[in-house]
View 1 (tube, rainbow, N blue to C red):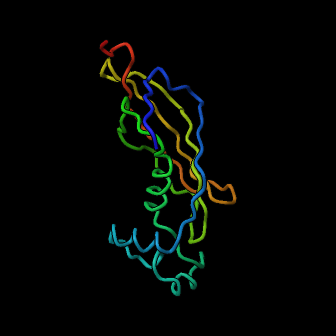
View 2 (cartoon, rainbow, N blue to C red):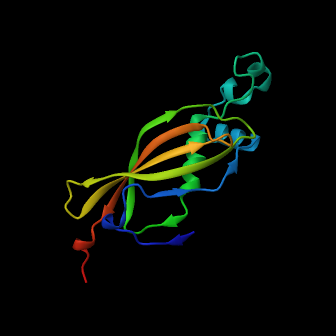
Length: 151
């Protein structure tokens, strides 16, 4: 991880970055359940899941989201900060042993109500090892504008 200053003007529409893969483990399921208190059988009970149409445990959607977003955090940008996430959707289930990777695309730039900042939307797509889309969301950043930087 390193520090890289990137101002509003530096973001280019259509620019993509992609992470390496990360395999989701049973430990991930257990730790996430402990952190969230979500012990629903869909995530924790292999025997019960075997009797269901999906036949195996399903990762918590919030686990897939948290791990995927964490995978994108490779640079510290002191010129921008996260405002939040929009349009989060769980498209396909993730299971123990699946390997996910993330593609982030700059999809929108627009003015902010604060003249010294601009909105930047990063469209986030998480794929499994079969290149199937499993999660999608939009990450909203507020980025400083160069014109307001004091010399």
